[in-house]
Length: 523
Image 1 (cartoon, rainbow, N blue to C red):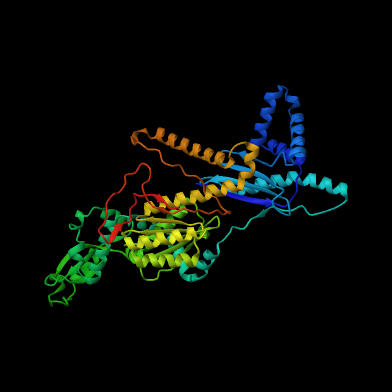
Image 2 (cartoon, one colour; image 1 turned 30 degrees about the vertical axis):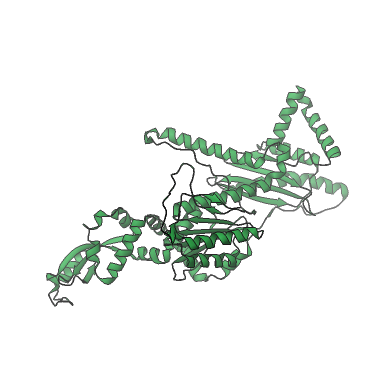
Protein backbone atom coordinates (compact mmCIF):
# COMPACT_ATOMS: atom_id res chain seq x y z
CA UNK A 1 0.00 0.00 0.00
CA UNK A 2 1.05 3.59 -0.64
CA UNK A 3 0.86 6.53 1.73
CA UNK A 4 1.30 10.28 1.35
CA UNK A 5 2.51 12.86 3.86
CA UNK A 6 3.26 16.52 3.20
CA UNK A 7 4.35 19.76 4.84
CA UNK A 8 4.03 23.42 3.85
CA UNK A 9 6.36 26.42 4.08
CA UNK A 10 4.97 29.97 3.90
CA UNK A 11 7.60 31.48 1.64
CA UNK A 12 7.73 33.01 -1.85
CA UNK A 13 10.37 31.71 -4.28
CA UNK A 14 10.81 33.29 -7.71
CA UNK A 15 11.80 31.55 -10.92
CA UNK A 16 15.59 31.92 -10.79
CA UNK A 17 15.73 30.77 -7.16
CA UNK A 18 13.64 27.71 -8.03
CA UNK A 19 16.08 26.61 -10.70
CA UNK A 20 19.01 27.22 -8.37
CA UNK A 21 17.24 25.23 -5.64
CA UNK A 22 16.83 22.24 -7.96
CA UNK A 23 20.50 22.47 -8.93
CA UNK A 24 21.59 22.47 -5.29
CA UNK A 25 19.31 19.54 -4.48
CA UNK A 26 20.96 17.72 -7.41
CA UNK A 27 24.30 18.26 -5.71
CA UNK A 28 22.88 16.63 -2.57
CA UNK A 29 22.02 13.50 -4.56
CA UNK A 30 18.36 14.34 -5.24
CA UNK A 31 17.84 14.18 -9.01
CA UNK A 32 14.85 16.19 -10.20
CA UNK A 33 12.78 14.14 -12.66
CA UNK A 34 11.06 16.94 -14.57
CA UNK A 35 14.06 19.26 -14.89
CA UNK A 36 16.34 16.38 -15.89
CA UNK A 37 13.90 15.40 -18.66
CA UNK A 38 13.85 18.98 -19.93
CA UNK A 39 17.62 19.32 -19.86
CA UNK A 40 17.92 16.03 -21.72
CA UNK A 41 15.63 17.42 -24.43
CA UNK A 42 17.71 20.58 -24.69
CA UNK A 43 20.83 18.46 -25.02
CA UNK A 44 19.38 16.53 -27.98
CA UNK A 45 18.36 19.80 -29.62
CA UNK A 46 21.63 21.71 -29.21
CA UNK A 47 24.34 19.05 -29.31
CA UNK A 48 26.28 21.54 -27.19
CA UNK A 49 26.26 20.81 -23.44
CA UNK A 50 27.73 24.22 -22.62
CA UNK A 51 24.65 26.07 -23.91
CA UNK A 52 21.98 23.93 -22.21
CA UNK A 53 21.77 26.28 -19.22
CA UNK A 54 21.44 29.26 -21.56
CA UNK A 55 18.55 27.61 -23.39
CA UNK A 56 16.83 26.79 -20.09
CA UNK A 57 17.07 30.43 -19.00
CA UNK A 58 15.68 31.64 -22.33
CA UNK A 59 12.74 29.19 -22.32
CA UNK A 60 11.96 30.01 -18.68
CA UNK A 61 11.91 33.77 -19.41
CA UNK A 62 9.62 33.27 -22.43
CA UNK A 63 7.11 31.12 -20.51
CA UNK A 64 6.97 33.51 -17.57
CA UNK A 65 6.58 36.61 -19.78
CA UNK A 66 4.29 35.31 -22.52
CA UNK A 67 2.22 32.68 -20.68
CA UNK A 68 2.45 34.44 -17.32
CA UNK A 69 3.02 31.19 -15.51
CA UNK A 70 5.99 29.72 -13.68
CA UNK A 71 8.50 27.69 -15.64
CA UNK A 72 9.25 25.58 -12.54
CA UNK A 73 6.02 24.65 -10.79
CA UNK A 74 7.70 21.88 -8.83
CA UNK A 75 9.48 18.59 -9.33
CA UNK A 76 9.78 14.95 -8.33
CA UNK A 77 12.69 13.12 -6.73
CA UNK A 78 12.54 9.35 -6.97
CA UNK A 79 14.43 7.05 -4.62
CA UNK A 80 14.39 3.29 -4.18
CA UNK A 81 11.30 2.92 -1.98
CA UNK A 82 9.79 6.41 -1.89
CA UNK A 83 9.24 9.55 -3.98
CA UNK A 84 9.59 13.16 -2.84
CA UNK A 85 7.58 15.92 -4.50
CA UNK A 86 8.09 19.68 -4.32
CA UNK A 87 5.34 22.07 -5.48
CA UNK A 88 5.26 25.88 -5.46
CA UNK A 89 1.68 27.05 -4.79
CA UNK A 90 1.79 30.73 -5.74
CA UNK A 91 -1.81 31.32 -6.77
CA UNK A 92 -3.80 29.16 -4.34
CA UNK A 93 -4.10 31.49 -1.41
CA UNK A 94 -3.21 34.83 0.10
CA UNK A 95 0.19 33.57 1.28
CA UNK A 96 2.49 31.80 -1.20
CA UNK A 97 3.26 28.24 -0.10
CA UNK A 98 5.85 25.62 -0.82
CA UNK A 99 4.54 22.07 -0.46
CA UNK A 100 6.94 19.20 0.08
CA UNK A 101 5.77 15.63 0.47
CA UNK A 102 6.63 11.98 0.31
CA UNK A 103 4.81 9.03 -1.27
CA UNK A 104 5.92 5.77 0.26
CA UNK A 105 5.04 2.12 0.74
CA UNK A 106 4.07 0.29 3.90
CA UNK A 107 7.54 -1.23 4.07
CA UNK A 108 9.40 2.08 3.73
CA UNK A 109 11.51 2.64 6.82
CA UNK A 110 11.30 5.96 8.71
CA UNK A 111 9.25 7.92 6.12
CA UNK A 112 8.60 10.81 8.51
CA UNK A 113 12.30 11.20 9.26
CA UNK A 114 13.07 11.15 5.52
CA UNK A 115 10.44 13.80 4.82
CA UNK A 116 11.81 15.88 7.69
CA UNK A 117 15.34 15.67 6.27
CA UNK A 118 14.09 16.63 2.80
CA UNK A 119 12.26 19.67 4.16
CA UNK A 120 15.25 20.65 6.28
CA UNK A 121 17.53 20.56 3.22
CA UNK A 122 15.14 22.81 1.26
CA UNK A 123 14.91 25.33 4.09
CA UNK A 124 18.69 25.43 4.56
CA UNK A 125 19.16 26.07 0.83
CA UNK A 126 16.55 28.84 0.78
CA UNK A 127 17.75 30.55 3.95
CA UNK A 128 21.00 32.10 2.55
CA UNK A 129 19.15 33.52 -0.45
CA UNK A 130 16.53 35.07 1.85
CA UNK A 131 19.21 36.60 4.09
CA UNK A 132 20.88 38.10 1.04
CA UNK A 133 17.67 39.85 0.02
CA UNK A 134 17.11 41.07 3.57
CA UNK A 135 20.56 42.70 3.72
CA UNK A 136 19.86 44.50 0.47
CA UNK A 137 16.55 45.95 1.66
CA UNK A 138 17.67 46.51 5.22
CA UNK A 139 14.80 44.43 6.62
CA UNK A 140 15.15 41.59 9.09
CA UNK A 141 12.48 38.95 9.37
CA UNK A 142 12.22 35.49 10.83
CA UNK A 143 12.41 32.82 8.17
CA UNK A 144 9.30 30.60 8.47
CA UNK A 145 9.33 26.99 9.63
CA UNK A 146 7.75 24.01 7.96
CA UNK A 147 4.18 23.33 9.09
CA UNK A 148 2.45 19.97 9.33
CA UNK A 149 -1.12 20.18 8.08
CA UNK A 150 -3.75 18.85 10.46
CA UNK A 151 -5.75 15.87 9.15
CA UNK A 152 -9.40 16.46 8.40
CA UNK A 153 -11.75 14.81 10.88
CA UNK A 154 -15.40 14.54 9.78
CA UNK A 155 -17.92 15.84 12.32
CA UNK A 156 -19.77 12.52 12.35
CA UNK A 157 -16.56 10.72 13.26
CA UNK A 158 -16.00 13.19 16.10
CA UNK A 159 -19.47 12.50 17.48
CA UNK A 160 -18.98 8.74 17.20
CA UNK A 161 -15.76 8.94 19.22
CA UNK A 162 -17.16 11.45 21.72
CA UNK A 163 -20.03 9.21 22.79
CA UNK A 164 -17.76 6.26 23.57
CA UNK A 165 -16.99 5.43 27.17
CA UNK A 166 -13.27 6.12 27.61
CA UNK A 167 -12.60 3.02 29.74
CA UNK A 168 -14.43 0.61 27.44
CA UNK A 169 -12.82 2.15 24.36
CA UNK A 170 -9.36 1.77 25.88
CA UNK A 171 -10.11 -1.83 26.82
CA UNK A 172 -11.35 -2.62 23.32
CA UNK A 173 -8.29 -1.14 21.69
CA UNK A 174 -6.01 -2.99 24.07
CA UNK A 175 -7.71 -6.29 23.34
CA UNK A 176 -7.45 -5.77 19.60
CA UNK A 177 -3.68 -5.54 19.85
CA UNK A 178 -3.27 -8.86 21.64
CA UNK A 179 -1.75 -11.38 19.27
CA UNK A 180 -3.53 -14.32 20.90
CA UNK A 181 -6.92 -12.70 20.40
CA UNK A 182 -6.11 -11.85 16.79
CA UNK A 183 -5.02 -15.41 16.00
CA UNK A 184 -8.09 -16.85 17.68
CA UNK A 185 -10.41 -14.53 15.74
CA UNK A 186 -8.86 -15.67 12.46
CA UNK A 187 -9.87 -19.28 13.21
CA UNK A 188 -13.45 -18.19 13.79
CA UNK A 189 -13.85 -17.30 10.12
CA UNK A 190 -14.66 -21.00 9.70
CA UNK A 191 -18.42 -21.27 10.17
CA UNK A 192 -18.17 -24.92 11.26
CA UNK A 193 -15.80 -23.91 14.05
CA UNK A 194 -18.20 -21.22 15.26
CA UNK A 195 -21.17 -23.61 15.26
CA UNK A 196 -19.17 -26.19 17.19
CA UNK A 197 -17.95 -23.69 19.78
CA UNK A 198 -21.44 -22.29 20.37
CA UNK A 199 -22.83 -25.79 20.88
CA UNK A 200 -19.88 -26.67 23.10
CA UNK A 201 -20.39 -23.54 25.19
CA UNK A 202 -24.09 -24.28 25.71
CA UNK A 203 -23.44 -27.93 26.53
CA UNK A 204 -20.67 -26.97 28.93
CA UNK A 205 -22.93 -24.54 30.77
CA UNK A 206 -25.69 -27.13 31.06
CA UNK A 207 -23.28 -29.77 32.38
CA UNK A 208 -23.60 -32.20 29.47
CA UNK A 209 -20.29 -31.43 27.80
CA UNK A 210 -19.19 -35.07 27.78
CA UNK A 211 -21.87 -36.06 25.29
CA UNK A 212 -20.80 -33.40 22.81
CA UNK A 213 -17.16 -32.71 23.51
CA UNK A 214 -15.53 -36.09 24.08
CA UNK A 215 -12.44 -36.47 21.96
CA UNK A 216 -13.67 -39.27 19.69
CA UNK A 217 -16.85 -37.35 18.75
CA UNK A 218 -15.12 -34.21 17.51
CA UNK A 219 -13.01 -36.02 14.94
CA UNK A 220 -15.90 -35.95 12.44
CA UNK A 221 -15.98 -32.13 12.28
CA UNK A 222 -14.59 -30.36 9.20
CA UNK A 223 -12.04 -28.34 11.12
CA UNK A 224 -9.01 -28.99 13.26
CA UNK A 225 -9.56 -29.22 17.00
CA UNK A 226 -5.79 -28.99 17.38
CA UNK A 227 -5.83 -25.56 15.71
CA UNK A 228 -8.58 -24.35 18.01
CA UNK A 229 -6.60 -25.60 20.97
CA UNK A 230 -3.38 -24.03 19.68
CA UNK A 231 -4.95 -20.54 19.46
CA UNK A 232 -6.61 -20.87 22.85
CA UNK A 233 -10.24 -21.36 21.84
CA UNK A 234 -10.61 -24.78 23.48
CA UNK A 235 -8.83 -26.69 26.22
CA UNK A 236 -8.86 -30.27 27.44
CA UNK A 237 -10.29 -31.04 30.85
CA UNK A 238 -11.07 -34.08 32.95
CA UNK A 239 -14.77 -34.36 33.73
CA UNK A 240 -16.49 -36.57 36.28
CA UNK A 241 -20.13 -37.25 35.37
CA UNK A 242 -22.97 -39.12 36.99
CA UNK A 243 -23.34 -42.55 35.38
CA UNK A 244 -27.13 -42.40 35.72
CA UNK A 245 -28.01 -38.86 34.62
CA UNK A 246 -24.88 -37.85 32.67
CA UNK A 247 -24.75 -34.52 34.51
CA UNK A 248 -21.27 -33.13 35.19
CA UNK A 249 -20.12 -33.27 38.80
CA UNK A 250 -16.56 -31.95 38.61
CA UNK A 251 -14.37 -30.42 35.94
CA UNK A 252 -10.69 -30.76 36.66
CA UNK A 253 -7.73 -29.25 34.79
CA UNK A 254 -5.62 -32.43 34.77
CA UNK A 255 -5.20 -35.99 36.05
CA UNK A 256 -3.32 -34.83 39.15
CA UNK A 257 -6.39 -33.02 40.38
CA UNK A 258 -8.43 -36.12 39.59
CA UNK A 259 -6.32 -38.19 41.99
CA UNK A 260 -7.12 -35.81 44.84
CA UNK A 261 -10.86 -36.06 44.24
CA UNK A 262 -11.03 -39.84 43.82
CA UNK A 263 -9.27 -40.56 47.13
CA UNK A 264 -11.77 -38.41 48.99
CA UNK A 265 -15.11 -39.55 50.38
CA UNK A 266 -17.09 -37.30 48.05
CA UNK A 267 -20.38 -38.63 46.72
CA UNK A 268 -22.46 -37.85 43.66
CA UNK A 269 -25.09 -35.19 44.23
CA UNK A 270 -27.35 -36.83 41.66
CA UNK A 271 -27.42 -40.52 42.67
CA UNK A 272 -25.45 -40.65 45.94
CA UNK A 273 -22.77 -43.02 44.65
CA UNK A 274 -19.09 -42.44 45.56
CA UNK A 275 -17.34 -40.15 43.12
CA UNK A 276 -14.68 -42.78 42.53
CA UNK A 277 -17.37 -44.99 40.94
CA UNK A 278 -18.66 -42.32 38.55
CA UNK A 279 -17.74 -41.80 34.90
CA UNK A 280 -14.38 -40.13 34.23
CA UNK A 281 -13.46 -38.90 30.74
CA UNK A 282 -11.49 -36.23 28.94
CA UNK A 283 -13.55 -33.50 27.28
CA UNK A 284 -12.77 -30.51 25.08
CA UNK A 285 -14.17 -27.34 26.61
CA UNK A 286 -14.39 -23.81 25.11
CA UNK A 287 -12.22 -21.23 26.85
CA UNK A 288 -13.12 -17.80 28.17
CA UNK A 289 -11.44 -16.35 25.08
CA UNK A 290 -13.83 -18.27 22.83
CA UNK A 291 -16.84 -17.02 24.79
CA UNK A 292 -15.54 -13.45 24.64
CA UNK A 293 -15.03 -13.55 20.87
CA UNK A 294 -18.36 -15.23 20.14
CA UNK A 295 -20.29 -12.86 22.36
CA UNK A 296 -22.03 -10.25 20.20
CA UNK A 297 -19.90 -11.36 17.25
CA UNK A 298 -16.89 -9.43 18.55
CA UNK A 299 -14.57 -11.72 16.56
CA UNK A 300 -15.81 -9.95 13.41
CA UNK A 301 -14.79 -6.56 14.80
CA UNK A 302 -11.42 -8.02 15.83
CA UNK A 303 -10.76 -9.37 12.34
CA UNK A 304 -11.75 -6.16 10.58
CA UNK A 305 -9.67 -4.10 13.01
CA UNK A 306 -6.66 -6.32 12.29
CA UNK A 307 -7.20 -6.10 8.51
CA UNK A 308 -7.38 -2.30 8.66
CA UNK A 309 -4.18 -2.13 10.71
CA UNK A 310 -2.49 -4.46 8.19
CA UNK A 311 -3.50 -2.06 5.43
CA UNK A 312 -1.73 0.69 7.34
CA UNK A 313 -4.69 2.65 8.71
CA UNK A 314 -3.40 4.44 11.85
CA UNK A 315 -4.78 3.28 15.19
CA UNK A 316 -5.80 6.86 15.95
CA UNK A 317 -8.11 6.88 12.93
CA UNK A 318 -10.09 3.79 14.02
CA UNK A 319 -12.91 4.10 16.57
CA UNK A 320 -14.61 1.05 18.06
CA UNK A 321 -18.19 1.23 19.28
CA UNK A 322 -19.30 -0.54 22.48
CA UNK A 323 -21.35 -3.72 22.40
CA UNK A 324 -25.06 -3.07 22.86
CA UNK A 325 -25.99 -6.66 23.69
CA UNK A 326 -27.85 -7.23 20.41
CA UNK A 327 -25.04 -8.94 18.52
CA UNK A 328 -24.25 -5.85 16.43
CA UNK A 329 -20.67 -4.60 16.12
CA UNK A 330 -19.76 -1.06 15.11
CA UNK A 331 -16.56 0.65 14.04
CA UNK A 332 -15.65 3.87 12.24
CA UNK A 333 -12.57 4.75 10.22
CA UNK A 334 -11.42 8.22 9.19
CA UNK A 335 -9.35 8.09 6.03
CA UNK A 336 -8.29 11.28 4.28
CA UNK A 337 -11.26 13.14 5.73
CA UNK A 338 -13.75 10.51 4.59
CA UNK A 339 -15.57 8.42 7.16
CA UNK A 340 -16.17 4.68 6.83
CA UNK A 341 -18.88 3.14 9.04
CA UNK A 342 -18.38 -0.63 9.51
CA UNK A 343 -21.27 -2.61 11.00
CA UNK A 344 -21.08 -6.35 11.70
CA UNK A 345 -23.40 -9.15 12.72
CA UNK A 346 -22.53 -12.82 13.13
CA UNK A 347 -25.85 -13.92 11.69
CA UNK A 348 -28.50 -12.92 9.16
CA UNK A 349 -28.79 -9.45 7.72
CA UNK A 350 -32.34 -8.87 8.91
CA UNK A 351 -34.62 -5.87 8.29
CA UNK A 352 -34.14 -4.83 11.93
CA UNK A 353 -30.34 -4.85 11.51
CA UNK A 354 -30.66 -2.92 8.22
CA UNK A 355 -32.83 -0.23 9.88
CA UNK A 356 -30.31 0.08 12.72
CA UNK A 357 -27.49 0.42 10.18
CA UNK A 358 -29.37 3.16 8.30
CA UNK A 359 -30.11 5.07 11.51
CA UNK A 360 -26.47 4.94 12.59
CA UNK A 361 -25.25 5.98 9.13
CA UNK A 362 -27.58 9.00 9.18
CA UNK A 363 -26.34 9.91 12.66
CA UNK A 364 -22.63 9.64 11.76
CA UNK A 365 -23.00 11.05 8.22
CA UNK A 366 -20.58 8.42 6.93
CA UNK A 367 -19.76 8.55 3.22
CA UNK A 368 -18.99 4.79 3.13
CA UNK A 369 -21.24 2.18 4.75
CA UNK A 370 -19.80 -1.33 5.06
CA UNK A 371 -22.20 -4.02 6.33
CA UNK A 372 -20.82 -7.47 7.12
CA UNK A 373 -23.25 -10.26 8.05
CA UNK A 374 -22.23 -13.92 8.02
CA UNK A 375 -25.75 -15.27 7.42
CA UNK A 376 -28.37 -14.61 4.79
CA UNK A 377 -29.46 -11.30 3.35
CA UNK A 378 -33.22 -10.94 3.78
CA UNK A 379 -34.88 -9.42 0.73
CA UNK A 380 -36.48 -6.63 2.74
CA UNK A 381 -33.14 -5.75 4.36
CA UNK A 382 -31.45 -5.51 0.97
CA UNK A 383 -34.21 -3.27 -0.37
CA UNK A 384 -33.95 -0.97 2.66
CA UNK A 385 -30.19 -0.54 2.32
CA UNK A 386 -30.19 -0.01 -1.45
CA UNK A 387 -33.08 2.47 -1.30
CA UNK A 388 -31.23 4.41 1.38
CA UNK A 389 -28.12 4.51 -0.78
CA UNK A 390 -30.11 5.74 -3.78
CA UNK A 391 -31.66 8.51 -1.70
CA UNK A 392 -28.24 9.63 -0.50
CA UNK A 393 -26.87 9.80 -4.05
CA UNK A 394 -29.97 11.40 -5.58
CA UNK A 395 -29.77 14.02 -2.83
CA UNK A 396 -26.40 15.13 -4.14
CA UNK A 397 -24.26 13.35 -1.56
CA UNK A 398 -21.35 11.09 -2.40
CA UNK A 399 -21.97 7.67 -0.93
CA UNK A 400 -20.74 4.08 -1.16
CA UNK A 401 -22.46 0.94 0.13
CA UNK A 402 -20.62 -2.36 0.54
CA UNK A 403 -22.37 -5.58 1.56
CA UNK A 404 -20.31 -8.64 2.42
CA UNK A 405 -21.05 -12.08 3.82
CA UNK A 406 -17.61 -12.88 5.21
CA UNK A 407 -14.45 -11.20 6.43
CA UNK A 408 -12.42 -12.05 3.32
CA UNK A 409 -14.89 -10.33 0.98
CA UNK A 410 -15.21 -7.35 3.32
CA UNK A 411 -11.43 -6.96 3.56
CA UNK A 412 -11.02 -7.15 -0.19
CA UNK A 413 -13.69 -4.54 -0.88
CA UNK A 414 -12.40 -2.31 1.91
CA UNK A 415 -8.96 -2.39 0.33
CA UNK A 416 -10.40 -1.37 -3.04
CA UNK A 417 -12.43 1.42 -1.41
CA UNK A 418 -9.37 2.79 0.40
CA UNK A 419 -7.38 2.62 -2.81
CA UNK A 420 -10.02 4.53 -4.77
CA UNK A 421 -10.04 7.29 -2.16
CA UNK A 422 -6.25 7.41 -2.10
CA UNK A 423 -5.92 7.53 -5.87
CA UNK A 424 -8.00 10.69 -5.91
CA UNK A 425 -6.01 12.13 -3.01
CA UNK A 426 -2.62 11.67 -4.64
CA UNK A 427 -4.03 13.04 -7.89
CA UNK A 428 -5.22 16.17 -6.09
CA UNK A 429 -1.91 16.63 -4.30
CA UNK A 430 0.40 16.41 -7.34
CA UNK A 431 -1.84 17.35 -10.30
CA UNK A 432 -0.08 20.74 -10.52
CA UNK A 433 2.91 18.93 -11.98
CA UNK A 434 0.99 17.15 -14.76
CA UNK A 435 1.41 20.05 -17.19
CA UNK A 436 5.15 20.32 -16.58
CA UNK A 437 5.64 16.57 -16.89
CA UNK A 438 3.34 16.03 -19.84
CA UNK A 439 2.02 12.94 -18.05
CA UNK A 440 -0.21 12.12 -15.12
CA UNK A 441 2.26 12.37 -12.25
CA UNK A 442 0.01 10.43 -9.87
CA UNK A 443 -0.26 7.57 -12.37
CA UNK A 444 3.50 7.70 -12.85
CA UNK A 445 4.05 7.26 -9.11
CA UNK A 446 1.54 4.46 -8.77
CA UNK A 447 2.97 2.60 -11.76
CA UNK A 448 6.47 2.81 -10.30
CA UNK A 449 5.44 1.12 -7.06
CA UNK A 450 3.27 -1.44 -8.87
CA UNK A 451 6.22 -2.44 -11.07
CA UNK A 452 8.49 -2.68 -8.03
CA UNK A 453 5.92 -4.85 -6.28
CA UNK A 454 5.55 -7.07 -9.36
CA UNK A 455 9.33 -7.44 -9.55
CA UNK A 456 9.47 -8.51 -5.91
CA UNK A 457 6.77 -11.12 -6.54
CA UNK A 458 8.67 -12.50 -9.55
CA UNK A 459 11.85 -12.69 -7.50
CA UNK A 460 9.97 -14.57 -4.79
CA UNK A 461 8.60 -17.06 -7.33
CA UNK A 462 12.09 -17.63 -8.73
CA UNK A 463 13.45 -18.25 -5.23
CA UNK A 464 10.67 -20.80 -4.55
CA UNK A 465 10.04 -22.54 -7.88
CA UNK A 466 9.08 -25.78 -6.15
CA UNK A 467 5.77 -24.32 -5.06
CA UNK A 468 4.36 -25.09 -8.48
CA UNK A 469 1.46 -22.71 -8.03
CA UNK A 470 -0.04 -20.73 -10.86
CA UNK A 471 -1.19 -17.20 -10.18
CA UNK A 472 -3.82 -15.36 -12.20
CA UNK A 473 -3.62 -11.63 -12.74
CA UNK A 474 -5.42 -9.58 -10.13
CA UNK A 475 -6.00 -5.86 -9.94
CA UNK A 476 -2.90 -4.37 -8.28
CA UNK A 477 -3.29 -2.14 -5.24
CA UNK A 478 -3.38 1.55 -6.00
CA UNK A 479 -2.74 3.93 -3.16
CA UNK A 480 -3.49 4.81 0.42
CA UNK A 481 -2.86 8.47 1.17
CA UNK A 482 -3.14 10.49 4.34
CA UNK A 483 -4.17 14.05 5.22
CA UNK A 484 -6.52 14.89 2.34
CA UNK A 485 -10.07 14.04 1.34
CA UNK A 486 -12.10 13.04 -1.71
CA UNK A 487 -15.48 11.42 -2.16
CA UNK A 488 -17.02 8.47 -3.94
CA UNK A 489 -20.43 8.20 -5.53
CA UNK A 490 -20.91 4.48 -5.99
CA UNK A 491 -22.65 1.58 -4.29
CA UNK A 492 -20.94 -1.76 -4.30
CA UNK A 493 -22.58 -5.06 -3.51
CA UNK A 494 -19.66 -7.41 -2.90
CA UNK A 495 -19.51 -9.64 -5.89
CA UNK A 496 -17.73 -11.45 -8.63
CA UNK A 497 -14.07 -10.64 -8.35
CA UNK A 498 -12.13 -11.22 -11.59
CA UNK A 499 -10.77 -14.72 -11.62
CA UNK A 500 -13.17 -16.05 -8.97
CA UNK A 501 -16.16 -18.29 -9.51
CA UNK A 502 -19.57 -16.80 -8.87
CA UNK A 503 -22.13 -18.13 -6.47
CA UNK A 504 -25.42 -18.46 -8.27
CA UNK A 505 -27.35 -20.09 -5.46
CA UNK A 506 -30.80 -18.68 -4.82
CA UNK A 507 -32.58 -18.52 -1.53
CA UNK A 508 -36.24 -19.18 -0.76
CA UNK A 509 -38.98 -16.61 -1.28
CA UNK A 510 -38.43 -14.53 1.86
CA UNK A 511 -34.65 -14.36 1.98
CA UNK A 512 -31.57 -14.61 -0.20
CA UNK A 513 -27.95 -15.31 0.73
CA UNK A 514 -25.45 -12.53 1.01
CA UNK A 515 -23.76 -13.28 -2.28
CA UNK A 516 -20.04 -12.68 -2.50
CA UNK A 517 -20.22 -13.46 -6.20
CA UNK A 518 -22.17 -10.47 -7.53
CA UNK A 519 -20.45 -7.14 -7.90
CA UNK A 520 -22.41 -4.24 -9.30
CA UNK A 521 -22.61 -0.47 -9.13
CA UNK A 522 -25.56 1.86 -8.79
CA UNK A 523 -25.70 5.27 -10.33
